[in-house]
Image (cartoon, rainbow, N blue to C red; front, side, top):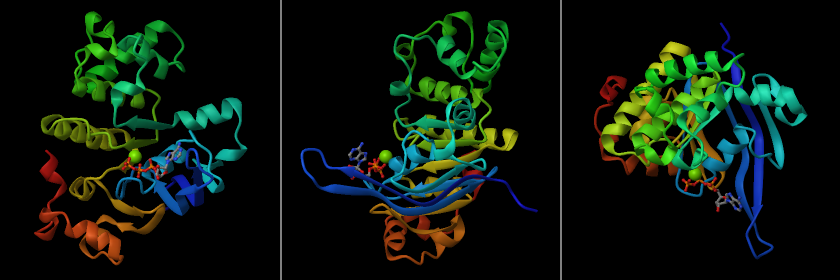
Length: 269
Ligand SMILES: Nc1ncnc2c1ncn2[C@@H]1O[C@H](COP(=O)(O)OP(=O)(O)OP(=O)(O)O)[C@@H](O)[C@H]1O
Ligand SMILES: [Mg+2]
C-alpha cells in the first residue's frame, strides 16, 4: 500500500540578508522532507535553526530561493490564483501566538466564517462554526461568538486557532510551537485535542517544537534541524533512542526523561 505524500520538500534553500549589512544568513540549507497522509512529523532543533522559515515555505507563505515544494502533488511555484488558494487551503497553520494570528477587531464568529468561506450560505457557516467550536471544547453560545480575540483566555484563543484551522478540512496542519505560550494544563488538553482530531479526520501534522519529550510522545517521525540543515530524520524511535548524529545526541542527552524507559503515547491522556 502506498500512502499519499502531502508535502514534499526537496533541496529547499532560503537565505536572508542580514539587516544593514551585505551578509547573508542561510536560514534553510538544502532541506528535503516529506509528510505523508495521516502521519505526524516533528521538526526539532535549537532557536534560529530555520524551523519557522521551513514551516512558512511549506505553507506557501514564503518562496524558497532554490529547491521544490510539492503540496498534494502540485509544485507550488507553478500554481496561481484559484488553484493556489485551493491547494493552500488544505495546509493550515497554527502558530505559537494564537492571539497575533487573529484580527483584533473581528469577532470569533467572523474569524470562523473566514475559514468557512467555501460553504454556500451564512446559515451553513453559522451551524458549522458552532459544531467546530463545540468540537474544540469552546461553548459556542451567541455571546461567545461575538467576543473579540482579546476577550478570550490564552487557552481559548489556542482552541479557536485549532477550530479555524480545521474549518477548511485540512489534510495537513503545520503547527509552529503551538503550545509554548500555554500553561501546563492547557498544553495537555490541546495536545490531546490534536491527537483526537488526527484519529477522527486523518489529519497529518508537521509539528515544530523545542520539546523533545513532546516529539517523542506525539510524532511518528522526527527531523532534526541544525544551522539550517536537517542533520537527521527517521522514525521517532530510531532518531531519539539511537541518534546517529552528534547534534541529535546532544539534544537527546539534555532531556533527562529520555534517558529512562520510553513513555508511551498514553501518557498524554
Ligand atoms: N524575515 C527574515 N529576515 C531576515 N532574517 C531572517 C528572517 N526570518 C528568519 N531569519 C533568520 O533565519 C534564521 C532562522 O530563523 P527561524 O525563525 O526559521 O528559526 P527557528 O528555528 O524558527 O527559531 P526559533 O526556535 O527561535 O523560533 C535566523 O538566523 C533568523 O534570524
Ligand atoms: Mg521559530
